[in-house]
Length: 459
Image (cartoon, rainbow, N blue to C red; front, side, top):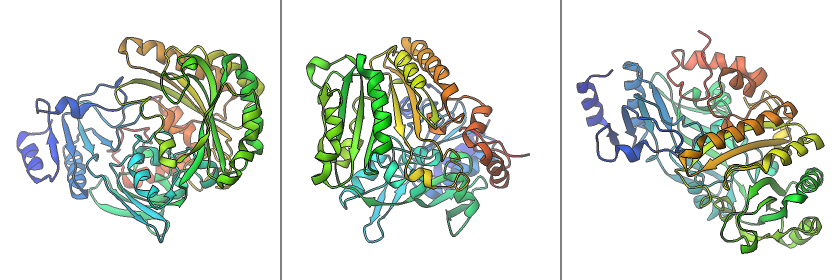
């Protein structure tokens, strides 16, 4: 409970907006990306700047409020919101500043990756992120971050140069390799456990026009296609990235009408090398099968990054599960084919992302992301617009995951987890977990920041 006078004082001092139950716009402000999650906060502080964030952290700590941090609101288990407590909503802290000479970008805590790509593309630059441009920068980064540029340029955390943070005591710090090194280590994979990150600064790389897009094969070719993909990617140049998908073909462009709503498998490709060499690089792809659809073409990098946005708009019901894999065995491939094509809705899918190359060159204790030896990151997503199908999509994802988990590296990717409990959080970090606990104890001993994949303080 918090008295009304305290609330009114907080509201008067905010440069942003304080939204409460009964206010106009409250229901809309409660919405997050995953409509399966419906929580009703007591207060939503839509912060305008860092000072607002500091004030919000202070009022939460001083009044023992449950606090959730929202950046892009894209989190699967809905950890950017809570019941009854305070949501610190940074969606209005949205800005980017590119330094083309240093090849860096400063990014406000409320930005999405679409905001970043728009800003950096004008300079022919990009940094590794995910595969959906509506994803929030904060959540993806703090959990690790992998996508189209990962094999060549590393994880998102490998390109994080510094961050501005508000800590549990309300103080403001900058973390980097030169200052507050323990915190800088912790946030590169340790999630939102250590404070509210209000700004990120990333290293950028030369990326402008890529050659990429989807190739599709029929369901009966799936086993052979997945084995071919596994072997081909082991020999592929670092400029070539592709993730494997078991999917239903969306009913719209760029997919040909005769394939619409068919269950198929495919790869979404991204080649960042010289366009003049692309034809030779993709020749083996064109020849295998051959594909039922060959949609590879030059395009601006942000066009590929945003290609799934319309397929997965906010307000769908989601349940996802993920794992890392050191190898993709024939037995695992058989299980993928068996369970993948039992998808309960046309938007449900399995994606298998390569994460070797540059990420494997970083030591397992250099960041909390401990699975530096892993070659693949799998996500199984049950997705539907109809809340009546929540159980069906959840059951499929869980059973599929349980079948493949014995073949996994035994860990977890924090960004592909629902609320799965402390054991799975520990499995995420492995031998780095104790160090994270000690840093949590130092900076957040009361566990104020606990609406997350929580690392509990030692005390």
